Amino acid sequence: MPAPIYILNGPNLNRLGRREPEIYGHTTLAEVEVLCRDAAGDWPMEFRQSNSESELIGWIHEATDNGAGMIINPAAFTFYSMAIMDALKMFPGPLIEFHISNIHRREKIYHNSLVSGVATAVIAGLGAQGYRVAVSELLRLIRKD
Ligand code: CA2
Image (tube, rainbow, N blue to C red):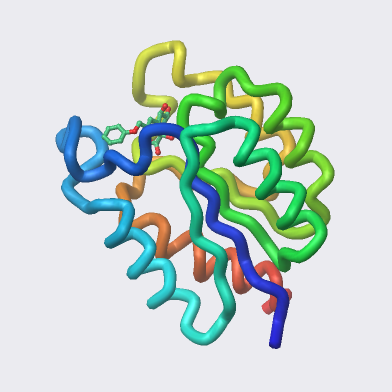
């Protein structure tokens, strides 16, 4: 059994599909999990969401010890959490920073990600369906296809 991939989602993403659909669409986080599992096939996956910085950091440490790769949508923590950035620096495998919206097309406060400098790749602006792209590209990086 290969090591799992971790898909971690930050604050407020549990409300996905219920607020600001013009920016984030109508897909719920439960539906995002289904499409991620569909894209991963048999590859084991830990799909999680938390509103707590501390819990996310604990999961990043867990992934650092056990994970083959990671996709993280750090939501608002993207822009100010040095603690999450420091934890991600220790992750040894491929790491994809993911955003549903194109953060660079939005207001200035969304432009300076602390995570991009420690990520392998960044995906932003493909909507919730972009998680599917992130999973298949993460697996390609892990398999070194
Ligand atoms: O586009 C993304 O995925 C974001 O990471 C979402 C964050 C925002 O702070 C980032 O800049 C871009 C906000 C997530 C807020 O969660 C919502 C959930 C449901 C509806 C609206 C927002």
